[in-house]
Amino acid sequence: DVKVTQSSRYLVKRTGEKVFLECVQDMDHENMFWYRQDPGLGLRLIYFSYDVKMKEKGDIPEGYSVSREKKERFSLILESASTNQTSMYLCASRTSGSIPDTQYFGPGTRLTVL
Amino acid sequence: QKEVEQDPGPLSVPEGAIVSLNCTYSNSAFQYFMWYRQYSRKGPELLMYTYSSGNKEDGRFTAQVDKSSKYISLFIRDSQPSDSATYLCAMRDTGNTPLVFGKGTRLSVIA
Image (cartoon, rainbow over all chains, first blue to last red):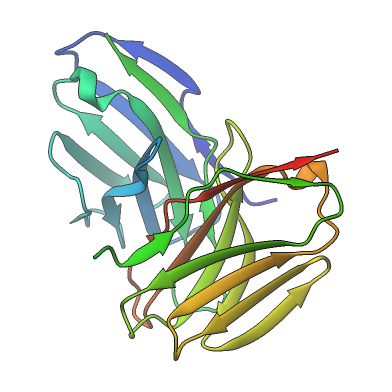
């Protein structure tokens, strides 16, 4: 059974804290993605990675950075958390080169910044 | 104009009804079309995957793609309370590019 796991389901942090969200996939997928999901705004792509040590900006990268040191792990970093980063964060992974290239999502991390 | 438009609903139907969910898009390069289902407090999961135009059927679900109109649909027959979820359309072009998602339609099927 394919699996994408995220380090926390719920997280509460203070404004200004550095926050790490971890994502691990066990499917040997090349591509990994970080989204945030907000009511009325849908899924918005923050960053993605096509390979180890590679990263690409998505639609809303400001205030975030990422790290991909190993193929199975993709980390999202909030350098200095702010209240407008309170959201549901979803990680996903996808293979490349085969069809259908199903994108699998993790269960999400609900982050609250106080 | 956003690349993918999807009516957010909410949509409420009685059990057994036929449900029609739709998305329109503007990018003619899109070739792969998907529908994801997301239950409350869960991540989205793939429901249907279609390449280019045409229909695809899987049980009570039918996905349709009309590339000439830039319009995709998901039909749910004999809807059940367990179908209550948010449905997101997603699409991409032929490259290894990120999916572009609609905002999702929230569906409630009332017993």
